[in-house]
Amino acid sequence: DGGITQSPKYLFRKEGQNVTLSCEQNLNHDAMYWYRQDPGQGLRLIYYSQIVNDFQKGDIAEGYSVSREKKESFPLTVTSAQKNPTAFYLCASSARGGPSYNEQFFGPGTRLTVL
Amino acid sequence: AQKITQTQPGMFVQEKEAVTLDCTYDTSDPSYGLFWYKQPSSGEMIFLIYQGSYDQQNATEGRYSLNFQKARKSANLVISASQLGDSAMYFCAMMNTGGGNKLTFGTGTQLKVEL
Image (cartoon, rainbow over all chains, first blue to last red; front, side, top):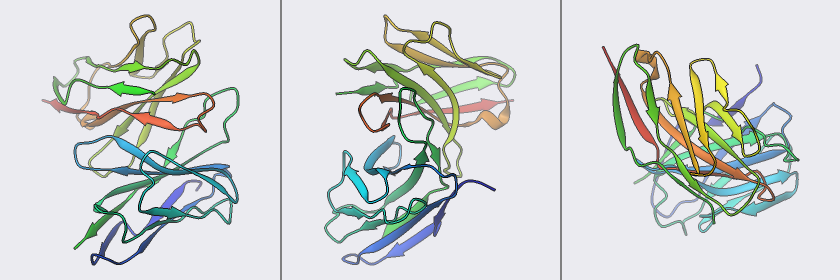
């Protein structure tokens, strides 16, 4: 089945530790995105990538880092510099932008709790 | 800057009734796309419906329709014949050209369908 997988579903880490969230897609999409969702809030964009080996900061990139070495993978690292890392993290992908708008497909999310 | 406003934090509707979820947006771009997503308690984001800024007709997808009023900058979601399974969080989002297909989300409306 085509889709986006995120692992793990729940993640617990101690304060001060870096943690990497996995996102894999087999939809052959060029573009991938990371969003953060806090309770009762909408999604906010952390980073996005439109093509392999290229990515851009979103609205709340501070304290996060990403890589895009393969088309199907877009891991997100939450560093110790992120002041409030506890949140729900959603990964998405879409066909690359053109004259029309492309729906973003979302993964099931990872709920990160920093103790 | 783009902004999405959803003024209804929570809504109740009786099963089989229709319900309208409000969404207003702000953008200076002449070309944009408007999306509605559903987020059940499990957390995944499910695409419901899309409206392009140049589309002449309101979008419809099964029981979902989008009441697009461009002059008022509103894009309300109408769900007809509500079902218990429609209980979820609903997000309105906007995408602009030249922005890497990034989505800007509203804060969402929690819909509860009652017997």
